[in-house]
Amino acid sequence: MADGIMEETRLNLLAARLGSDAVFPGNPEFDERRQVWNAAIDRKPIAIVPTRHPEDVSSAVKTAAERGLALCVKGGGHNIAGSAVANGALMIDMSALNSVRINSVNRTAHVGGGATWRQFDAAAQTQGMATPGGVVSSTGVAGLTLGGGFGWLARLHGLAVDNLLSAEIVLADGSIVMCSDDENTDLFWAIRGGGGNFGVVTEFTFQLHALDPTVLFGPTFFALKDARTVLAAYAEHAPMLPRESCVWANLMTAPATPALPDNLHGAKVLTLMQFFAGPPDAGYSVVRHLYGGVEPVGSALAPRAYTEAQSFLDQTYDFGARNYWRTHNHRALAPSLIDTLVDMAPELPTAESELLICLLGGAVADVDNDTTAFPHRDVPFVSTPGVRWRDPSADTAMTGWLKSASRRIADHAVPGSYVNFIAERSGDVSSAYGGNLDRLTSIKRRYDPHNLFRSNQNIAPNASTDEP
Figure 1 (cartoon, rainbow, N blue to C red):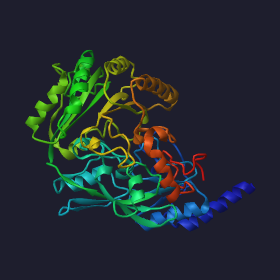
Figure 2 (cartoon, one colour):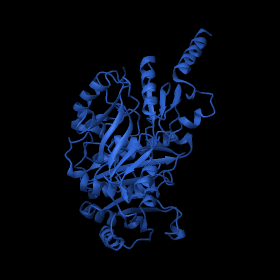
Figure 3 (cartoon, rainbow, N blue to C red):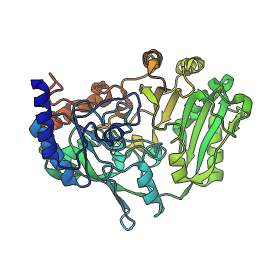
Figure 4 (tube, rainbow, N blue to C red):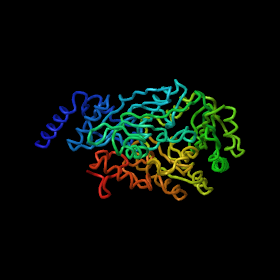
C-alpha cells in the first residue's frame, strides 16, 4: 500500500512538472503514441511528452535529468531496435516538430527533428531538389541521419550525414546549441553516424542537390534457378555502375504483382531493385549489365516520380509487423557467399522475410573512414537478412532462424555492422564504430557524462558501465 501511494505521489509530481500536455498510462492517446514501427517492441514509458519547440525538448531533458529518469526520443519510430521507447523512461515525442523549410537560392533544407522522409522529399521536390535519404518514406529523418543514412542517392551524393551542414541540438544539461564544421566541431563529427548518444537534434540543415522529378525505378524479377548467375554478374558489375545508379539485390518471396505471372506469386525469386537518376533510356542499358544474360521472369522497372520511388517499398515495410534483422559488411560478393544465400532462400520462414544486399560505394567511398563517425566507407556491400512475421508466439522461432542464417553469412563477411540495422537495443557498438569508437567515447564523456542518452546503441562514457 505504501509503495502504491509513493508511486502515485511520484507520478503526480512528475505530471505537475511536465504540464498538461504530458500523456500518462490510462490516457487514450498513450498506447498509440508509444507504438513504433517494429511490432515486436512493446515497452511502456512512464510518461510521453509531446514537443513543438526546442524549448519543450529542453524542458523534458532537464526533467529527466533532475528526476533520475531514463530518457528516450521518438522521431519517426522506425528504428529496428525500438530505441524510441523504453520501459519506465520519459519519452520525448518529436512528431509535431516536423517543419521542412526549403531555401532554393542556396539549396538548403531546414528540417525538424520529428519530420519523416516523406515530408522532406515532398517539400524538396517542389523545387526540383533532393538529398540522400532512406528507402521507406515513413522513416524519420533524425534516426536515419544520425546513424549515417544511405539509400538510392547515396552513390551519387553520399550518405545523409555527408550532406548535413549543421544541427541544432539539446544537450544533456538542457542547453540548446548549434554544431557544424565551424561550431562545436567535435559534437558535429560525432552526430554524423554516432546515433542519438549526444543529445536531441531539433533541427537539421541539409545541402540539397538538383534532381529531375522523374527517375528510372522498380524491381526486376528472376527465377531462383537463375539466381547464382545473376548474382555473379551483380557482384562483378554493380560496384562499377555509374554513380547515378544504385541497385539492391534481394532473395525473397514473389509478391502478387501484375509484373509476374500468377504461377510465380508466392515463389522464391531474386529481385533487383533498380534506381537510375538520369535519362530512362540510358538507365535501362546500364542495369542490363547486371542480369548476366538471364531473361527476367517479370519487371516493373519504369520511369516514376522520385517521390514514388521513395515510397515504393512503404507497404512492403509497413507498420504493424514483427521484425528482426542482422547486418554484415562485405568487400565483395564471393561465390561462396552467393551459394550460401541462394541455398538459404527456400528456407525463408515467412513470405515477408528476405535476404537483402545493399549497394554502397560511389560518393560514400570518397570520404575517409574517420571524417565522420560513420566508419564503413570502404565497404561496397551490406547484407541484411531479415525476418518479418505477425504471430507473437513465433518470436523465438523467427529470431532463432535469423541468428542461424546470420552466422552462416558472417563466415563470408568482414568486421563491421551498420548501426541503424542492429536489432538488439544494446548491440555491438564496437562492430558499428570500429576505429572511431575511442573518439566517440571521449566526446560522449564530454557532452553526456552521466549517460542520460542511453536508449540507443549506447556509447557509454565509461567502459565499465552503460548506466549513470
